[in-house]
Image (cartoon, rainbow, N blue to C red; front, side, top):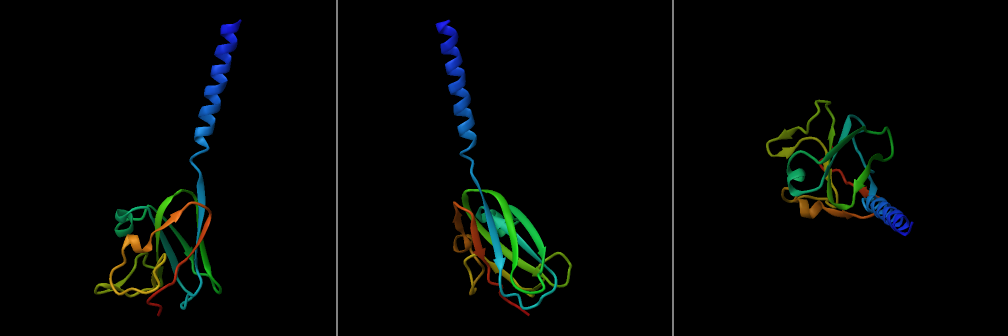
Length: 145
């Protein structure tokens, strides 16, 4: 009987340990808002990068939203694990699904987290931030037409 109680206690303890380890993978909501959009047409594409590679190339996650008729446009990333991220946004005014360019410069509005003006190509470390709680991140659009 003592062996049975000991086995039961160990089983319950191990189940409790497994259950609490799953709770450590906390996720958060990242709300990206763009307050000042000059041209109220098209769609916003918002890329969330979790490394230099996903900042320079394909985003880790991408969402899109129609530009709101007035006020700010908001996009929410949910269930994002704690970590370091950067946001990239562009406004597809002509509806072709890509950021158009004139030479090296974008010809459609774009923006990044924590960057309000560019003098050179953006760097991940300049746009990155730590996500450790639900966060609202403002993105200022550049090159507005």
